[in-house]
Amino acid sequence: MWLALGADGTISRWDVDAGAHEIVATTTVPAEPDREPWNGRHVRRHLHASHDGGFAAVVNDYGRFGQVVDLRTGEVTLTLDNQGGHEETVPFSLEFARSRGRCVVVHRTAWNRLDVSDAQTGVLLTDRSFPARTNTDAVPEHHLDYVHGSLYVSPDGRRILDDGWVWHPVGIPAVWDLDQWIEGDVWESEDGPSRIDVCGREYYWDHGMTWIDSALIAVEGLGDDDEAMRPGARVFDTTRTEQGEEWRMPTAAEVLSFEGPTGLFFSDGTQLFSCDDAGLSTWDPAEGRLLGTVTGFSPTHYHPGARQFAQLVDGMVRLRDL
Image 1: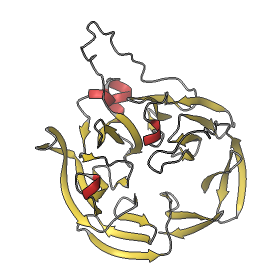
Image 2: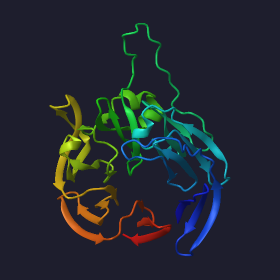
Image 3: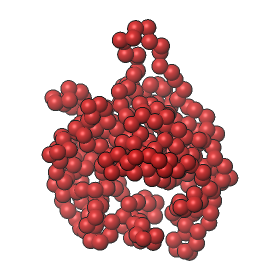
Image 4: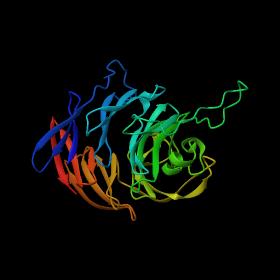
């Protein structure tokens, strides 16, 4: 079963085997048509689905607004506004997760702030406020100079990966513990002890990235600067850290890098898939070995439950089983 978003804002469940669509909700997210694209990034609708299929979110990537919808009732449970601030440089930060048996949604509420809300009730679970400044030159405690980007929850649901950047600008993916953030320290996403940086790349973010398993992450691009970036993948173990000489901060331990993968990244928990205009490629992330290619098929989505890839071409969907 797939979840699909229509051009008119309708959300439907698509039974591939039966060839049937059932409309379950409709969203009314503002279109934001007057935005100027930044670096080729145009405002576009993005549909997110919760892992249990009970909730969906529709957001404007490279824009400000979105909604969370309960697919059982069709009601909007949460109206989203990331408040702007370099929003044109990143997709709208949003991902579903689970906490204490309930569905929660992680979402950006300011350029340098993420929050967690209960998906069903919309109740904020990470309420906090920065201390008032007593000195105009002093940086408040917990202040985070970081523009949040795309979010990825680990396969075990325990941690989150954030593809954000800091000024001047440098793309610095970061990882931290979800349970600790929701149940323990509301500042965990800013400066909690579980937060680590993955790597640093000047002028380079919003590219291929995926969890391979609940420890390993693969990021697209070989190099530390966009002008010298080469096609390839770097694999990091986020359970181990090392002191980075260049960035002078602990980062995840890099365990492998290899040439070849480019474009979007996906994983089934074992293999790494890369997808560009030429087609879909399968890689062994433990050895960096190419396992196979499918030319002419360039999917933009992977359904882990159905183990299917999907590509939208001229209003038609092409599916391929893993």
